[in-house]
Image (tube, rainbow, N blue to C red; front, side, top):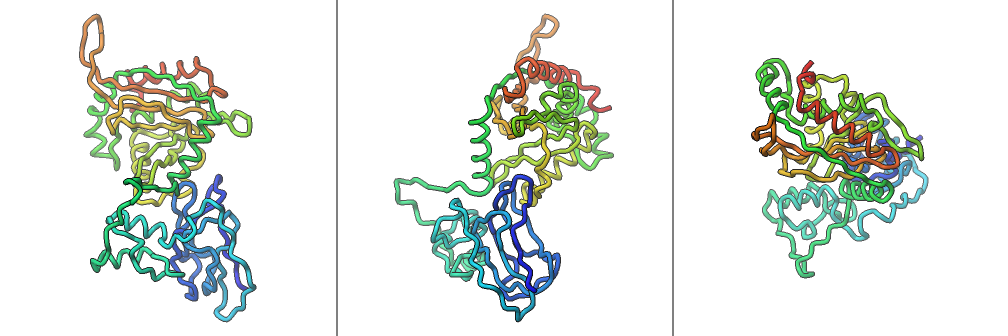
Length: 381
């Protein structure tokens, strides 16, 4: 009997997914565990394997279609099996516009090379333009540049994928949670000196060299252990306060903002933090983050210092109750012992959900975090 291949929930928050690309053609044999289809979730693109061996008898979920979890995507069975007549699952109204003939993967490739995907002859189902069609046109030199937008130079790009998910989640967060932001300036001179002191030893013994941001992540985890009220989330009108510290680390990639989670940071050494952050960042940049990489975050850290930003007010990452924003380190005059000297100053801000946290607990958290960063010797122990 043929097996129904349905869209599985690839994460706790997943309600629907978009078919990005079928890796096996209809009528071809597939083995158990073979890569079958790429599904775009609300967070990333997941490579899904075939649960059984057999022939891919019928593809029901079409490329670029967006379907609810549980929807029938394909039938897998014996070559001569007769299948029941089943209508294709209805795609939600938010799926690709009717008449779109270019798959998302093909469009991204075309955009990257500055070619007009709409002018390429498609060889996919129903004449759709596939990634292979675009690559062939690029290789053969037959691809044409995009047609200029006629409407007074306005380019209209529908929200999709990670960008749409970010818009939906953060828009809902801003509308639902009363955001309050507090900030403090901190002298990072001692933190920079500590890193310089240990740099050679880390290079000799560790796989990853801790950055200033890694030290700030460690300091944040240590401070959250003392101020657990910020290590919390509001779920179904109940405050969940966590003992483990799982830090979401905001990473900017071409497709948009992703926030994979660094787990049990309070138990990790600086070199372990550095290695795990690099692993997650590498996965983010090649699009291989899995649903498990986004789960169970309790607090988020967003650092825009590397982009030259002095300070900013981050938006809460729901359902978390607080997020730390880190600005760049800049040289600025400070008063020490009655004398003016040059300090290495950064601005730290915490945005919190006032339904969960009051101003005073957040202020105490920032005060202790500032003190630890300015006297950071214990971070390496």
